[in-house]
Length: 484
Image 1 (cartoon, rainbow, N blue to C red):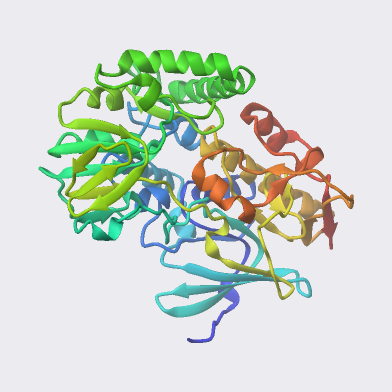
Image 2 (cartoon, rainbow, N blue to C red):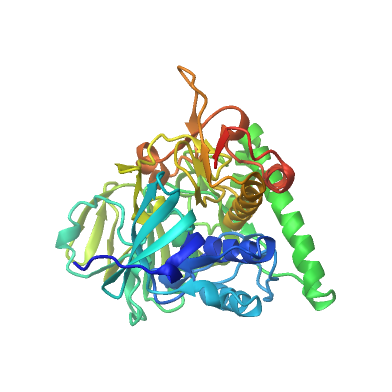
């Protein structure tokens, strides 16, 4: 392998890793709030978009409304509240073009490693660009790499899957040339991906079988509105962003404080929408309380409508065995299948798999304390983006971007080169999870994730309205050590 090389043109104040929703938003905030900052965005793929460029399965869409999930500085132009993948990509490209952000983005630049040296107060990044290694230098790095492992899948044991003989597909790596018309398709899973795919697969497939080990909550939401036809787009976008953010937060609080009541309400509404052949208490009553996992949204009730089609069936329980051309359930049910779609979740990974070292020592994410939801204890000049588990991702990513620009300005005023969070020295320090969810993919990754504290800047960010105020005008110096 070639030795990494670099020159003066590869030295920056800030390097953002990832040109997805978080990275693009951060680039805009740096451009507008810190106009003198020299920065760049390194994207490993050929195209921008991150998740929205990779996920191409039928019907792929957002699970948050785009007034909340979209950029606060670039209005969502479409009538649909929950944009599909192509719309979101078009929107992101339009935002980049309208605000002249393209000049900062370098595609096909895969960051392999990042090493901090206290001797010169800078990060050195080794980047693969078409097989050639390049060295980049940065004062700050921002990890806008999301929380999904885009290169590998979770390990899911399906008895006899090797005997199937047919096609097994992951939504994360959906083949672009695949035509499922006339096929008998089994979708294994019950989360947002399965709920999103089923109505679209049912339009062309001969048969769709939704096979779920346990149910999830599926909530119908309005897919579009009428205000856009009578009011300026900017008015609609800003008012809906505010109202949707508040209402979703209130709903989350209601579920947390009144789990039994919220569960009863959701199950009652679900039962109204199911066909007679489905047993609501067996097939659509989750084992957990609302709010413990993210609710699956069903714009305009398309998922529930699809359940009434003759070519759709639901099977709840454990798979006994996969045989050639079919699936056998432990309760005795069976189904003939041509294609199996593994909508069984994804692998959670922070930092995009980048090898990170601080003064020669490898940095571990595991159990490291998080400062203001944006930095890690003992790691200098590194910001990472992590969204909300029960609200729009971009809201929290934007708060983190504001913390970054405020911190850079504060450091410039103080003449400081280094900012590093330092956890309080206390035996038996109490901690809590950084990503509060009982979803399988979160529990599987729990030992690899950082943690939050119980007080001060170490507490988790869980309230979008309050978090926005703190990010814009709150204290960003407590727990932080500055060094010139």
